[in-house]
Amino acid sequence: MAQTPTGTTRRTRGSTRTKMLVSAAEVLRERGAAGVTIDEVLARSGAPRGSVYHHFPEGRSQILREALEYAGYEIGTSLDEAASESTTVLLRRFVQLWENALLTSDYTAGCPVLAAAVGSGEDEHQLTAVAAEIFSRWRDAAKQCYIRDGFEPAEASALADTTLAAMEGAVVLCRSVRSLQPLHDVVAQLEFLIKAKEFVTKFGVPTLNL
Image 1 (cartoon, rainbow, N blue to C red):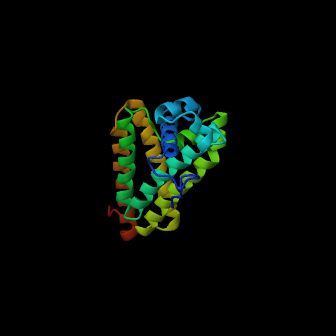
Image 2 (cartoon, rainbow, N blue to C red):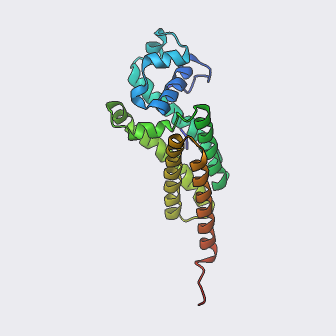
C-alpha cells in the first residue's frame, strides 16, 4: 500500500513546500537526479530562496529524496485504488498516468522512480533504496490484484513483474519515438496474456486431436 511521504503529512497540496516537491519531481522525471538543482526548483515553484532551508534544512539532498518519495506516493495511491478493482482497471490506470505525463510534457517526462533507479551518478546511488521501496510497493499492489483475480501467488508475482517492467519500458519507447503507440501496444499484449492465462487456469491447456 502507498505510504505518506516524509514531511508531507500535514501539508496541503498548494503549500510552498509541496509546490517545491512537485517541481523537483517534474525535473527528476525529465532530466534525472543530476538535473534537479535548487535554482530550477525555485524557478518552477515560484518559492523564495529562503524557503529552501526553512522547509528542507538538509538542502538539495533532502529535496531530491522527498520529491522521489512524494512522486512515488502520488502514483502509488492511484495504482492502489485501481488495483483494488481489477487487473483491467489497473492496466488502464497505468496507461492513463503515463499518457498524461507524456502528453503534458511533450514527451520529455518519464517515470521519476525509474530515473532515480537506473542513474549512475552519486545522486542516484543515494536514491536507489528509496526507488527500490517504491517499486516494491507498486509490485505488491499489482501482485495482490492478480491474486484477487484468481492467480496463484507465484504466477501473480511473475505477472506483477511483467506488468511493471513492460509499462516502464513502454514509457521509454514512447519518449524515444514521440508516440503513445508503444504504450497502447504493450497494454494490449498484457491484456491478451492475462486472458490467455485465465483461460488456461480455468480449462487447462487445450490439446489438438491430430
